[in-house]
Length: 105
Image (cartoon, rainbow, N blue to C red; front, side, top):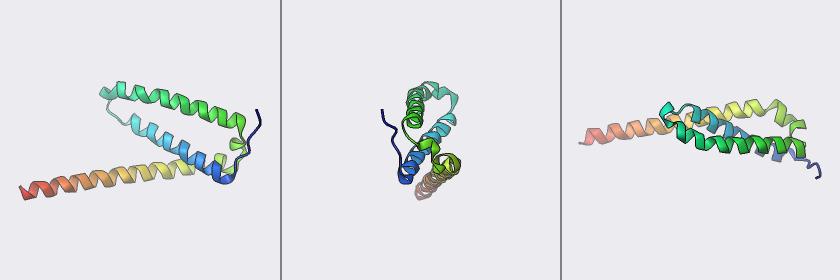
């Protein structure tokens, strides 16, 4: 099996993909405990993502690239902030929509 060399663009795309998975994992941890069975479905997904990361590090130069080491945390933090901003905007819109509907009744 040959060692594949990723371009910086490919490395950033992979980092974004992994950051999205980490954001999803963080959001799942905020679900109420009574949703334990629901969380269990994602456990398999995260196990596959971990295997993907291990394979990525074995078969590519991903862990050698600057973006993978120096910018992963920054990309994750920005992705998580974006995720929470979108969530807050949707919740605010729902709340405003509900208030508007109640005032019409």
